[in-house]
Length: 181
Image (cartoon, helix red, strand yellow):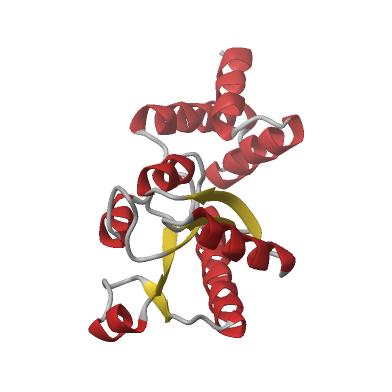
């Protein structure tokens, strides 16, 4: 489920959008009237979508977008005047007056994109620093020498023990080194 932060200068507008989204199955994490409030909530989350207007008490949408964490997207709801002038690259926008159908479909499309990005990030192997990689390599080397395993077998053994014990590979490699040294 995607985190949605709604930001409009008038609290009534923000609550109206929130109520519409909640009624249609979206999880609205926060309702804000300033960019600073929105950033505060966004920084406490891994990813999400900010649904907002053009201008807030403390900043413009461009400033908010520039300060958002890496895995956040923005849906800008803007008057026809600003919509026709164009918006910042990478910002999805809808013209006012907004149609419920357009808002929900656009947000659903953005939520699917967020889910795709999240799956892609999770599928990437975790990057280990050289020190951690050395510990894992040392554990594999010990298993290869003592138990006559290939490198692939030693790696799979550490991986399986890690999964069975509910620890990460680094902790399991450290245990192998302690036990077998």
